[in-house]
Length: 230
Image 1 (cartoon, rainbow, N blue to C red):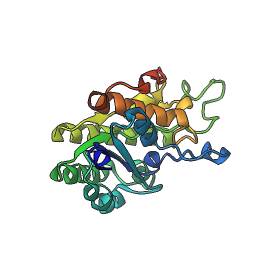
Image 2 (image 1 turned 135 degrees about the horizontal axis):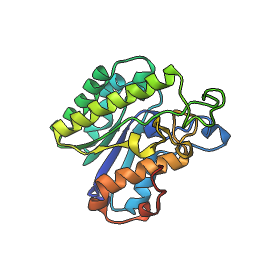
Image 3 (image 1 turned 90 degrees about the vertical axis):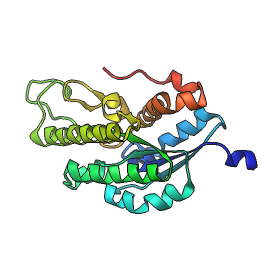
Image 4 (image 1 turned 180 degrees about the horizontal axis):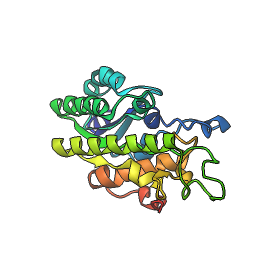
């Protein structure tokens, strides 16, 4: 037991995208697939992963429980993803990034290495293209879809800037799971247009592993992941 307590601890912190909820995909008999589960498998006992994701949570709620669910556990790292639900409720990106930045600060003050993550895109249900246009990836999109994606792009620029200012890693989940000229969530990574499929959560874990944890924990099966969509 003493050796286990000395293993580096990683806390995956966030909303349903951290919890691994799969929306309509999950209704087909499958359970949640938190990306932290893949990280734990690839660490092969060299580290511990704890998942603290709550469905439907806003970043303001995340700030309120951050001390209890992260700081008090004294992890070595915490991967923080939030903002999707805020955008759905019409909260502006500048307010969202204030909450996210607050969590970065709380982690750093407690000598915990925070890792920022950009918010992934969305994939509306078909059909959305104009008459005579084939496929939602190439045709024009409704204004509400463009607006949602624009908000994500703005929020993600702010998240990246906040990470740069704090000199902490930032994993670009948006770019790594989007496809096509409209930057829609890739079909293979989408379960219900908002949440990720099993493949999506594995992709999430793979980029976190490669960009943050591979140097700490060494090589693993993550190198066998799927290629980035074009």
